[in-house]
Amino acid sequence: MKILKLFLQSNGFTPIRQHISMGFIILTLCILISGCSFKASSEPIALMEPIDVKLSVSSEEISLNETVHMEAVVTQEADVVGDADEVMFEVATSDGVSMEFEGEHQGEGVYVFDYQFKAAGEYKVTSHVTARGFHAMPSVHIVVKE
Image 1 (cartoon, rainbow, N blue to C red):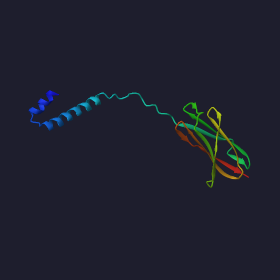
Image 2 (image 1 turned 120 degrees about the horizontal axis):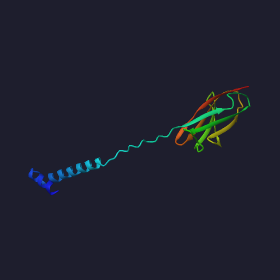
Image 3 (image 1 turned 45 degrees about the vertical axis):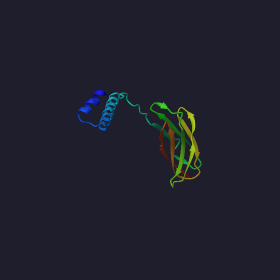
Image 4 (image 1 turned 120 degrees about the vertical axis):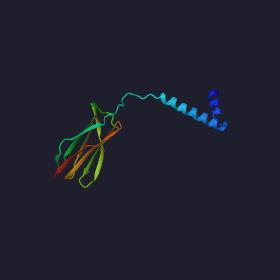
């Protein structure tokens, strides 16, 4: 510190300019020292794979008042997902009217729901699955004939 003061005085710095200059030099040294101590991590960041949902129905063409068995099999990489936050089955008509029903967990990542169609027409069944921070919503189409 004394050497720095003597250097600044010998170069014509006033006391106020000496304090400002010393502060600037100390701040610069602190930044340089802390920058040199930063160690970048060379470990790769592990990214989670999204969930995969396989939606299937017992039949895509059925008769009026027939019950359809719907099944959503939820996996993530090679693991079954038995801890889904939410599994809903949405049944929607071709004119946009829809209803949602909660799926029942059967074990081994399998969630099911049975529904009886009481009106003829074309329907879209979508499973809404939320699990492990991901959301998937595969769909299938069903035709109900009279």
